[in-house]
Length: 320
Ligand code: GLN
Image 1 (cartoon, helix red, strand yellow):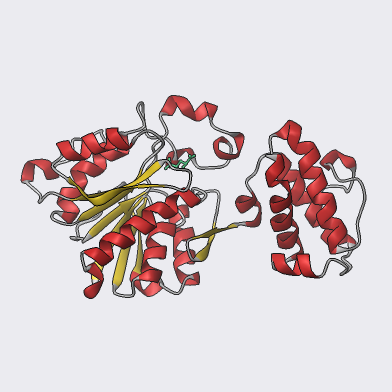
Image 2: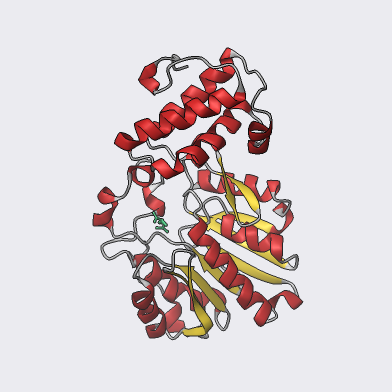
């Protein structure tokens, strides 16, 4: 348990919620200049961290600042602030991230869900509705599910959907299963350990994925919040960042021939991913390119070509 001293940027033990919040904001703002916690995020980070440390909803923190808190609570807050100053993302400290319409458990085995990825959920939802997939039972396959946030969000929105969610890491699948339970969709969610589609023999209607897409050589230059905390397996997309897309392009026809594919991509990758998909015979869906809130092309949708025996074979050694 960290000591309440100025080593962690907080000088004294406070006694009210309001004082704790003020101290936490100040510590993050002041220390943040050197530690690159963006100063404009200091107060929102502080609200989330203090509320979680006190085990109260953020609004309680704001509406009852006079409520006294004991020393143990102060120490918990200081511990959380010290971790944030070491660049640990807020979601990892509190173990939870709000995504789409739910809160998702985040663990060291999972990528921290980003708001950018909600673009994939939105685009997949548009395809599901436009194509009437939700008029009947349908199955989606989430490749590299992590927290399960993409698949679970779609299961919550579409009651006739079932999902097969694969990940190579059993610890990620454990988190995804907990998340499906918490979201009330566990009965339609199958978590399966698989190296991409290796252990998928079913035919599905829709494939979704936020695959690793950072070029290997760029990982070292990522912000510490990402580099030191997100699993590299979920980030590293090989030499040009596109290995997973080449694999998915081949596998899609086998597992979802004639169906739909919705993918996340990294900044400036949309054209390159498009080329890979077109070469594999998949066709860009109508309105099948979608920007995230920052205006970056982030989600791509394709009509998957029907499988041919040649296309469905995946050359050895090319799994990302
Ligand atoms: N969006 C993540 C980042 O920018 C990367 C996630 C991924 O590779 N799929 O760090």
